[in-house]
Image 1 (cartoon, rainbow, N blue to C red):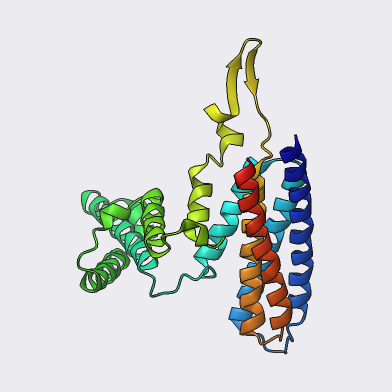
Image 2: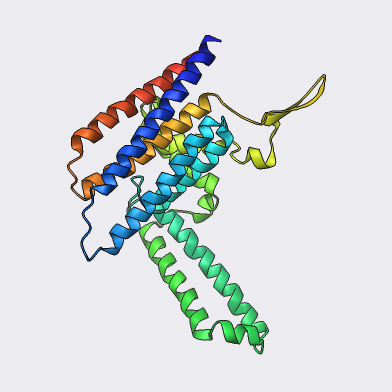
Amino acid sequence: MEYKKRLEASINNLELQLRDLLGYSQNTIELLVMSSYIKQKTVYRINIFSALYQRIEGIIVLSNAKQTNDINIILRSVWELLAEHNFVGMHRGNLYLEILAALEMLGTKKQWSAIKALREKYPNANTWQKQWSDELIEGRINWAVIRLTKFKIKHPTVNLSKYDRLLKRLEAVDAYNVAKYTNHKNLSQMDYRTVYSLFSDDVHSTLAGTIENSRFTQTGLQVRLDKYDLDTVRALTTAYSMLLDYINFIARHYRLNQAIEIKALRVVEKKQLQLYKELETLA
């Protein structure tokens, strides 16, 4: 019972800290000085912030409603948003990003090659003639082939079939991180290990249901509709780190002189990680 009380108090405190970070992030964005000419990248980054802000707000609301399974769905969306737009330390030189791009090119080649085969089989089909020209189809195939050739020259030993599924790519990155940080306790909240642990849960369990969420008892079938435990702490602390990393990028890139404030928020982030470790030992 003592653990449960401490867990609930910790979650309530984490929600407040995340709410405070939302307020700080909004104030930081308001410091941006907009001229009559705004670069497209700036508009793009502000739009990313808007999408990130709304997702974090949703996480807080769901935490209040004790719906951790739903939080994990939103948190995965946050991670995908940041990963897709290069805000989680994944740069163009990252091998796994290059593998992902090569897999997309492989898919493009297969897709347009299949379209080409259909065109050759049904040359007089009006739909094909109206939608895509022969030149466009050949151009898409050649573009994909050129990109794949460049990838193979740069990484001759990489077998793309080993990374054809998201789970395989996450496992590879996870193995890399474990090799780099032999003590997994030193991994930060933003490393792939945390994300992978979230992915390994059935985050769609509120839609599909899993054996974890239902069981047979003497009185019949018992279905658990909510989840409110250490996973909630992990989700809230990870969301905090994600938002803090992004707003730190904005503050540094636009030279907003927020170093002292960011440093104080990093202290909070470290305390959150320590809290999670403490609760983990008590669970």
